[in-house]
Each structure stands twice: as C-alpha cells, then as structure tokens.
Length: 321
Image 1: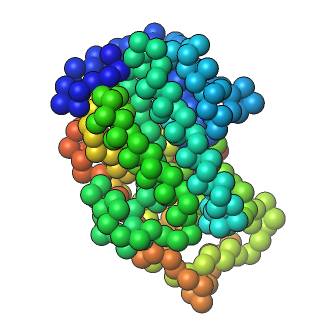
Image 2 (image 1 turned 45 degrees about the horizontal axis):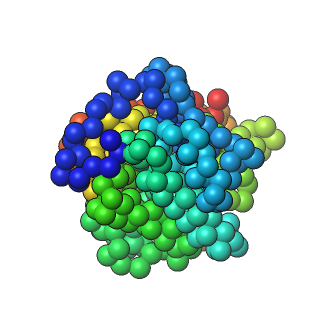
C-alpha cells in the first residue's frame, strides 16, 4: 500500500478512519510532537508508537531499521529534530546539519524498506527557515531555493530542505507516499523558555513573568516594535498535520500558517496583558528590529479547506497558564 505511483496518490484510504493502525510519532516529547500526540489521542487513535531518545536513538541507522522491522507502523510523522535559536545554531553548526540529516534520512529510508510496504504514508515536518532570507512576502512554496538562506540558521535549513527533497525523490523513484509540511513560527505548551536560546514569543512571556514576580517597574524590548510576524498555536499545527495525513498526497511541500500578522509591539502589549504585568513597556530603538515582515503564504492549504482556529490572545493565555 505504501508504494504508490504519484498520479494515483488519491488511492489511499482515510487516515482519520484508520484509528487502530500503528502511528509512529517521532519526537513526541517536543513542542510539535507532543501536540500531535495529544491530537491523535483525542481523535481516538489507539495504537500510537512513541520512543524516548534513551529507548531509540534516531541518529543510529541500524537501530531505526530494527525498530521499523519489529513494529511495522502504518503511518509515520517525523516531528523529531535538533532545534535551537541563533546562538545554538552558530555555536553547534555541525550538530544542526548532521543530527537532522541523520534523523530524517534514517526514518524516511526505514519507512521505504519496511517489509511488505507496511508504511502507507509519511509526513515530514520542516520550518519556515527553509526559505531565502529575501523571499517575497507572503512567502509562497515556490520560493524554495530561489535565493541565499539566512546565514544564522543555514545548517538547520539545509538539512530541512534535504528532507523535503528526499520525500519528493522517494515518491518519484519508489512511489513512497511521503509529504512535507512547513509551519510558520510556532508557540504553545512545552515551548522552550530558555533565557538565551528561545524564540521571540516565549522570550517575551518569560521576561514579563520575571518582571511581574520581581515587581519590576519596566520591561525593555529591543527595536521599535514595528516588524510584522505570524504565529501559529502548536495545536493548530497538529490539526493541520492530521488534515494533511488524511487529505493530501502531493509532491509539493505545504506551508502551514495562521494567515494573520501582528506587529512585535502588538504582541508585546498582548503578552504584558496576559501575564498581568502592570509596569511600563519601554522600546529600545537603538537596538535592531530584524526582518521587517515574515509571513507564510498558506493559500495552498486554505484552498484545500483548512484554516487555523486558535486566536493569538487565547493561545497566549493557554501557553502562559
């Protein structure tokens, strides 16, 4: 079943009706994987396969092949990755390219080689950082490989691009029903709130919370607050992943975004309100603003009938709680 001719991709049965099938969620403890795991449990999936890093090291090819041979999952969702901010990417570039290449190559290849075509479908998760630094806004899927990457995270981005291309190549050559989804900036429960290498939203939540607890008078945020950003709650991404597993079997990777923009200023004000910090919000305009606008063009997914449901304020309150 797993080996399809690309033009016959629609021949697959419904993922949503196959709730007793084995589904391997790689990376089930991370921000994305944990949300997908919660979503599948809520939908009544009864045979979810999960392994901690201690139980299965995804960078070891023989171990991954042995796991697939023993368990023979019908569906595979690749949410496992080595992730981090600018600081981590620049400090450990070898880890970011090698570990991610190893994880995704081992899983995709093992899915193909699994006996009797056991794996019916695989979904690979990437990131919006795959796109060129100066991509058109909003960023369409066809912007991939149209220009140089953002140098600060190119090691991670190159690995993720290789993952997309591997899914496409395995579909073309072997008929493996492998698809790829590229989410925008994510946030939600189990995010990384580390003071040095977290992303903008968890960093703001942490900073305002710390200020509230210490009764500080003000919180200083870099820049002018004018850049526009897009955020997607991780539970919305999990919903989109299920939607794509059920409805999509194409060669092209698919952008997944909220299609809603917010200025960093609006975002900071919202976080301040949700956290309940009553001091002053100060903008340090001597510090850089970063990219003026970063929005994904998710019209392809919208055209299939999916849209994000969780409003940003509601999602922030849930994340802070």
